Length: 303
Image (tube, rainbow, N blue to C red; front, side):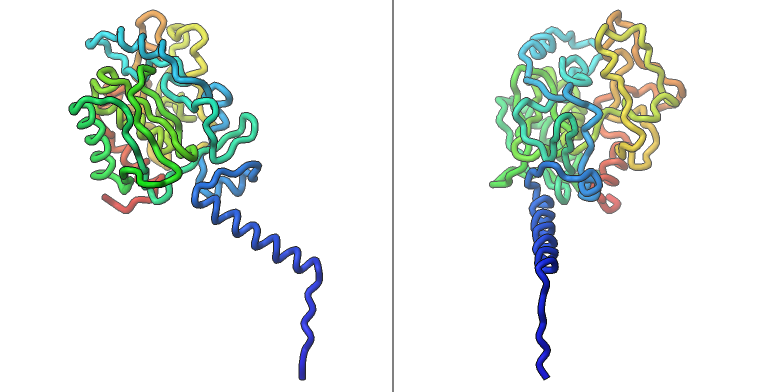
């Protein structure tokens, strides 16, 4: 006996919709920029919420930042990335950069698939400076599953430049070409500066801006430069930047005690006196907490 199978037009439309969604998802997972995607969908894909930064994170590389940096005395305790005119000193998405998702002030970046970061080096660096960059790569390779690899034809990649615009980068994978700028000489005084900027590119923000930071530090507002207090804005409680790792004074992502100071006095005071609180602002290398967060974000197995 033959059975005649009929499919309604609504069923056909439903099948077409499912196929379209699956096709869209596959493209998204490969890094194709998308627009107007629901927040729930984005969160499931492991994207990074940049909304709290608003329009302040967008701008242009500033030559004045390089001139200011060139006046930094070698003995000064400030880290060079704390001196930039960019958001929080060193966070910048250049105008015109396409993002994984942006709709008005709502913007998202992404993690790097499988922790692989293709890169190019375009700056005119000395052999010593190239060795510092290579050391940063090796620290990631030795202590995490993240791998920096020379770019072949990947669409999304980091280009390391050496323009006279300071030390800066963006947060997470933006989509397409994105810059990590390390101004020669001044961004290479300590090995941790390169590691700091690359950690931004991997998706991490500054430690002192964590939501729970008020239990660990006090921002001394009276010493902060006029108009610069927004650089100490806290992340939202829903931001998953800590991955269960306790607040980390020793993080290579923590700023120094006098960042954005208008009078040379401290702007950040540790509320808990520990062996790590004396390391606040260090740029020697990763802390144990940094390694734990990197491995958690990228689901690395124990190194």
